[in-house]
Image (cartoon, rainbow, N blue to C red; front, side):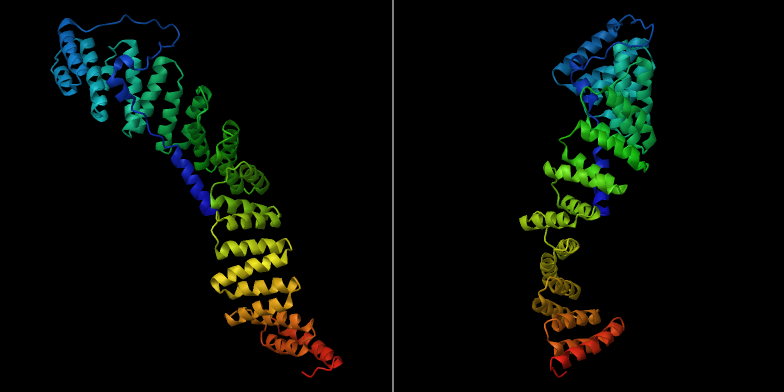
Length: 427
């Protein structure tokens, strides 16, 4: 179960390592179609006058744009790289355009130096400046430069005085990638609040932040909220149940797993085994046995000696001794385990099927059982209560050889002798 939980949590952590959509590619392919960036929201902000490149630079840019429109990106880049200008806006505009073409060609890392130069010059129009800062952050995230990405996302927030789901979400992801788990919480809370519709990965990031810091109470609270928001997500239900098990809240774990089971959300054999285990932990052994039995018969849970023994054990706890004997017997036949034959024989004896019990107990001896004294004591009783005093006496002699049963065997010996004498049986 711990292995499954570990596995289940490891799987959960992987889901938050989200890939970053290549916004640079989208913007560079067609800047006219790029998602427009709203105006800066800082108090007292007044939009600056829009600049355009000078005539000389403009001619080169126009030529580059013609090449670009013909899908001749290399020629467009070559034309732009030939531009030499000391005019601050023209230089920034050209560098920004070069950056977009490089990013659109899959050269994100190379494009960064041009974007950074353009943005740091502070010469770009407001829309390009805001978009450029965001693009630098996105590209750094895409290239695995997470600390740089965080720095530029913060720069975007400060420059725009705006709140944006995408920025907060990506910032939280960057903190996750650098294992700064505590730092995930402020931006991911913002992202959750700003999301146009609920986003599962935001909750996964928040849960992972707490889980990685062993803050299990908070982990469970996030998971409980996620289940409410996404009630049809089967993985969230079983994961919540596993977290309850982690903190040993077996009652809540069982109720969660039961709800998941009845909604058809249990899709793994390990989860059926977990449900059965929870019934056992909550002192409902009959259901623990029945749920495993049902899914072993259907083939959903693989029939192994361990599973069969578990079913037998739960039937035994539920005092369904005949059924317990049946499953112990199946486990024994699979493995020739003398302890399983002993359990089968013991259950058959309790179920008042002494002759069948004797056969199973003899198999236990034949397979080399260690607890010979105990086995002979049960075989003695199975014979004694059927009036077979001679056989009972033989088993009591064997039981006397085992130090663990010697004392009890001696007390029975005189009793058997007396019963045999009273019934005219010679021992």
